[in-house]
Amino acid sequence: MFRHPGFTAFLVCRLAAVFAGQIQAVVVAWQVYDLTRQPLALAYVGLAQFIPMLLLLLPAGDLIDRFSRKPILALSWGVSASCSLALWWLAGHGHAGVTGIYAVLVVFGCARAFSGPALQSLLPQIVPREQLAQAIAANSMLLRVASIGGPFLGGLLYGFGGAGLTYLVCLVCFALGTALLVGAVPVRFAAPPSPAGGTIWQRFGAGIHFIRSRPIILGTISLDLFAVLLGGVVALLPIYAHEVLHAGPEGLGALRSAMAVGEVTAGFYLSLRPFNRHVGKAMFAAVAVFGLANLVFSLSTTFWLSFGALAIAGAADMVSVYIRGALVQFSTPDEMRGRVNAVNMLFIGSSNELGEFRAGSAAAALGAVPAAVTGAVCTLGVVAGWAALFKPLRTVDRFEEATPAVTR
Image 1 (cartoon, helix red, strand yellow):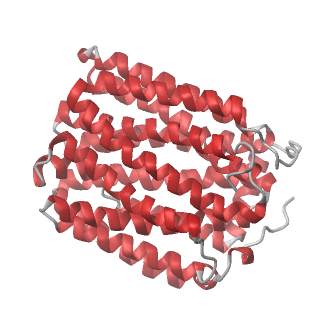
Image 2 (cartoon, one colour; image 1 turned 45 degrees about the vertical axis):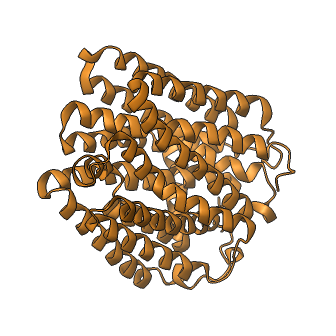
């Protein structure tokens, strides 16, 4: 798998971009909370990135299916680098306040609307189908390395040099990822782009119809949507670090890295020993463990117990990501991947960004601890409900059983 030309370079450029995104996320969250001391302000951080993703879903998926995916991804990363540059400038001009930060995050959300589905659609064009599941596991595991180092380094850089220095590091990482993608990642397994038949609405409607006709895809991406939307605690970490655990920005970085520690551990195992039996049941079990671990974190007042609970949640999430990614890729033909992955990214974005808004607004209304506890319990309810609603997903045994349907 690593011997395929361009796969290692693809991993490196993805690592650089994810590293930048993780550093930027932790610094933006701490900076906004430091400026406002309002949980609702953290909710708007997620909302500012989600709204443009929602609005650009249709053109992003259509363009990715009709044109070469690598230039689209390179352009979106270039825009992300410009956003890091703008945040660096704002950090030196305090009068801009949080309004300027929100404005930059809107542009960053526009870039993510294209980079997310383009990334997911590009990997099957780099490695052969028979090695796709293992490539997904290795890719996910190595990305979590950036998720460990990024937040931890982001907290240290913010504590040492402030927001300005940290945003410059993000700029360099995005620029490096873009350069490597353009110069060192060949695309060897790409099918010719599909002809642009019909209107953009008709083409996008065909993608929606395909997802609705595949209960494995619909159940997979909607399970992740509601489980993380209702039960995610990442948006509350600045409050927990500041007011519950009294850990400061360095502790916030460590907490943001805790889930990635569990993810890397599970991902490393999966990259060496990928499993392909009882995958549906395994995904439901993993999401249930994710909810239970978040419940433990919600009630903890001890830093290392909180760190351990988040690490277990991360390991469970990695198992879910591995199964979800493989099922979606195996279920989708190449000419439909842009539209399917655009919808998938909308669901992921909804679970992350809207999840942050849900958590922040709930914390403003109920308090951080009650909001986190309620969310974790809701995640467990989602697991039970989806297991009953999506029997084909619950009973699917091997990835190969999720074969693409014929598309028009």
